[in-house]
Length: 437
Image 1 (cartoon, rainbow, N blue to C red):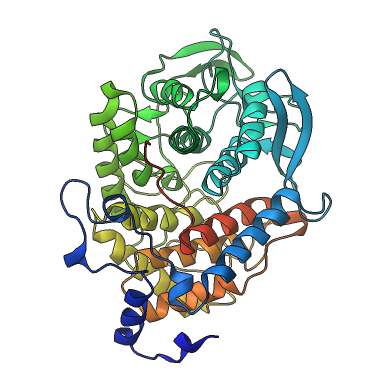
Image 2: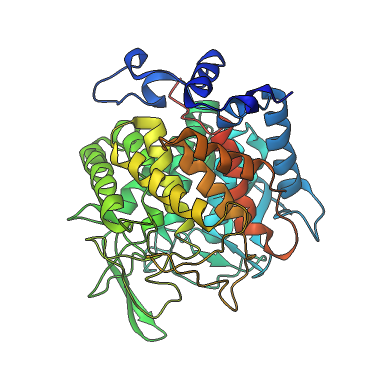
């Protein structure tokens, strides 16, 4: 039954959403320092319900995507693989199938998906693999207390460097696990592990060692002034950030649940990231660069797509939109979502490409990088922008485009699949804040 699709006015859509519990008017929401979003109200928008899909259909769709990516055919569908066990229990890794490696990005996303969907066994097995093979425990190693961002599937490190998006999702997933399931012992004392990681992200003193290209020095993952996530924690004369690493929705929770000495720091970091989104997103298209300076200007360097809207940058709109949905603290995030959805609507909801200049020139797929011409991951993050968008009718078009997109399979199923699944969860109300019990 799709009777909701017959409604043509925003008013009708609003009334139906109210009846289905998907929308809470501002006058009925809690206000104050915690904002008027889901953290304060406990209510999460379900854009699929607002578009006419039933709760059972939505749950089945999310579960089917999860089953395919985590338990599907190992050659064409799955990205998660069992790898035996050790003294801490079973081991599972999440692999970038196209590049034949295991990345902290995918491992931490996998843990977040598992805690949100109440898959404790999978959560623990992924965390066990990360701690067994990726965690750097040598106090003399430059990346001590962080995780090697890329490993072979046998656990051998491809790099000794760390990527802060992985640590950020590890920390948040661990805190949610602590709150949802309670803490265990050793590496399964989730809250203690999260606190240790959050402290290192802010306070880890620089450590140097000889490297392939000279001395290699790694410090904390957070820049102090402004308080902003770094692209990498390597100490360099010209540090910069990755807009898609900015997660103010998480920082607000760390300002409440993280190490007490750093709570004011994380609260300020959330404010800075919200201001940064406005600075770094193009004022017409809403597109953000893959890498940026602290003032939001594009950071052009030797990496592909540095100053373009590339694969990393797909996630930026999702980050600011989830922040709006959870906290309702930065109305500018609504303007940003309207801007980027307007841009992609003009490109064609069903046929836009993966890479653009910030002013909107289509660059096509980048040779040597593994994504489709119209990638499911970007379809997902553009739909998540609807959580903050004010044009409900246009947002519905992106919501339905995601609904009609099949779960990624084949060579490119890793990054696209993870973003796709998390986007389904965001729009279906199954990606939530798990508060302390």
